Length: 242
Ligand SMILES: [Zn+2]
View 1 (tube, rainbow, N blue to C red):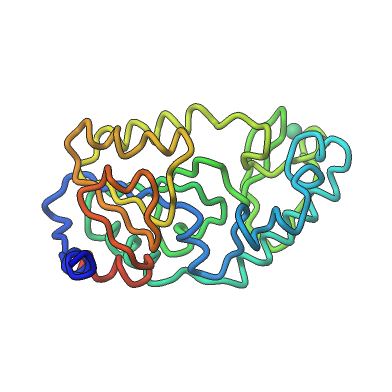
View 2: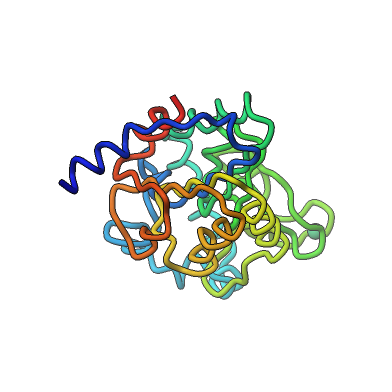
């Protein structure tokens, strides 16, 4: 009975034209489908490397070169992978719909590579570097173009959220504003149990948004959604939006 009702939900397609503002909220599962190693969990990067040595401000202050080289390795791994059909479905939608926002926990830039332009990166980007005095600069290569700021000579750190870092409040506010205003909220490949992400479906609900979850596994937030699809993004998204 349960299985047949889930199957029935899986086949329900959506007309994006019925919604004014669609927000896609994506997490690690979205990237893992492209073959990008996840950071947390079993087999994740933090089970092989100690984050204390590679992903916190103290590690960077102690040995910036070692930390930067580690992040170059992450870039190379990402560049060896490609966006999947789920990324492509969201990118295609942005081309024909006036207001699509992607809010992502991922730092790998896969949505942009698929073609999305309106992407809010909650944890920053592996493709951006930050000077403590001169702000953020983009650097799109396998290897970093430079390790130090050309204006002041300070070490440039990856502009991503490391352990012990605060989330960028401006970026978070932008995400919250989008989610508050959307009328369709689609969560993909994230358990969403950690705040602030845990609050997102409730925010969307306050605006009476339709809420859909795409995730092969259920989690404790699943009951908040109007529709849950227990499938991969690469399969579910093209089906959902026809
Ligand atoms: Zn500088």
